[in-house]
Image (cartoon, rainbow, N blue to C red; front, top):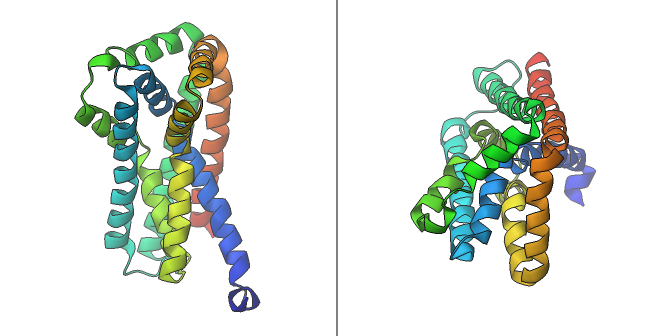
Length: 231
């Protein structure tokens, strides 16, 4: 209540909205989602999917540590300062990566997307747990991972509150990876049908729909970075 009276709540709402957009830019990741769906359908799939998810979590927290080491001693609220400018440049860069992926996916013919998915799912029955973990660590938008953490640092919240916001960010950013695992465990037969339908839909027409969605998210993320630089 005291925080709200002092005007902290609007800042927190702004932070939540910003983190939501950044998390969406990480979550809507076609290669990562398709690999996770393939791992769940593979031999020993649950363990492989869990290893992939663990790799993503380690990546998110590793970049949070990097952000704290590099930016933690600076005041990112100082407009025009080198750290603040670097924060927004990374922000815009992450958005451009999302935008580029969306445009590429949107412009590809369905057959090309189907071929891409086929390659991503190739030989997942024989993939090692260590490789699944490594894929989870690598198939992420690194600039957005970094900027998610620096955005929390920029809000200058008490430590417990900052950690809570970042944990919420991690949950949202990894939702497209952990949610399939939950569904596969809770309703395996129904999930099997859904998973096959998702793959068929992605091959048939998902390139346009997903591409446009990712482009929209990329535009929002890039705009936040650019507006931050112009303030």
